[in-house]
Length: 544
Image 1: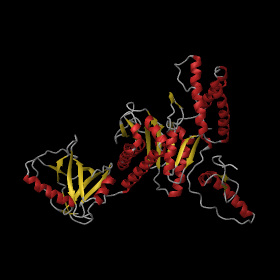
Image 2 (image 1 turned 30 degrees about the vertical axis):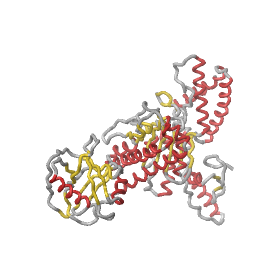
Image 3 (image 1 turned 180 degrees about the vertical axis):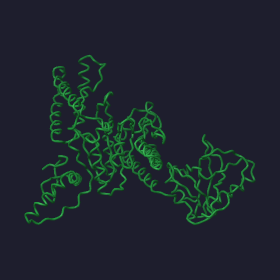
Image 4 (image 1 turned 90 degrees about the vertical axis):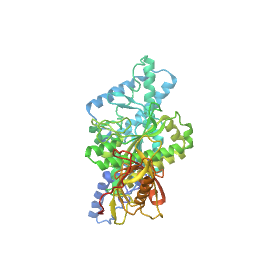
């Protein structure tokens, strides 16, 4: 027997009706949500009418794999049907133009695959597959693992190794991966190759390759709003999100990672580009300042974690040409244009990460990997595992930062609030207005006496309380300043802490505050200041 959802060999069947077979709990869950629940209830009513014994159905299985909407490939406007008919006519005449033995073999293979594809379309099965590797709410997508047509544009080229990388990451994260089926990838590969050969035989090298690509294969990363309700890619993503929400609850935080390929530097500024356009535009459109800050915090965490993995990997000795490893591509809070590789479109088009946001994924990122980096990740399992772990670590940090209302190093006892005059030295080697100060705690549990808030992956000083380690550092620095002739600079409330003992992300800086006795703090001054003689002016004490 075959699975009612994916067509694979079945391992079991519905314990209630016994008429539906499945390969896994994953497929059973999605079939239950789609129509099988109603089928079972109908049988239940019939059993009750017959006086037969009835037992309630088992709890729906938890593994979130979905069956796509049948209408995804069948509902098309009339002009789409006309394009398909013209495409079929183009294929029917290929045997009269191709005479090379290799071309004829490819054509024979293509005919078999075309028949299989038509059978799949007739049965309602999609041309993309959702593979589940575990129960976690993590979805990887690789929409460009084959060449695709785009409305009014040149065909989008295949991005090599993206499906292998996406599948490997999903396996390491125990999540799921959505990609074109192996049959469809092979069919498209033959169509692309034959279109090039036809152009060569006709002597028309000016005609773009890919004119024989199937027009029914829509680019999932370039969908119009009107296509979303009938596109199998978006419907599978939506149902996966719904299945995970059913399992984990409506407040679930789910992760979507869209894997893409780009050219090697210098055509691309870095080997890896982290695109957060979907999250940023979504927050900006809603006027959600906190949401935008959470998105940027996620981006900074990704850049840090992924950068560390790639920098430490021995395999990167073969990563050429030399260039920046990681960069962040995201629009500003007031921007309306889409930075390149940010993973967002405007004007009624939607990328995979934008579709994930529409499907209620809380975190969605587009990763653009250079050709050289893709080649290494596809062959180095250790590096790929570290890459996946870095994604998980960044996601955890972003969720923790989002939930944190205040830093754990904030003062817990009531005290007198004072201005944050921390006297520091100019941090050498920086062209920014960046400074440093050393804070020493008496013991590990000694309170810093500093209130901060998390902002864009950094810590912003809100207040300093008298008697804490920071206040003591202020006093010591002030006394030293009185004895020296060097100019001193003063650190004020609202300054931004960017580094503590080498940790540059807010969660890492908090950990250093908890564990270290000596804190080497680097901070940015957020307002204009003038170096000079310092005054120990403080505001009048007020009760906190």
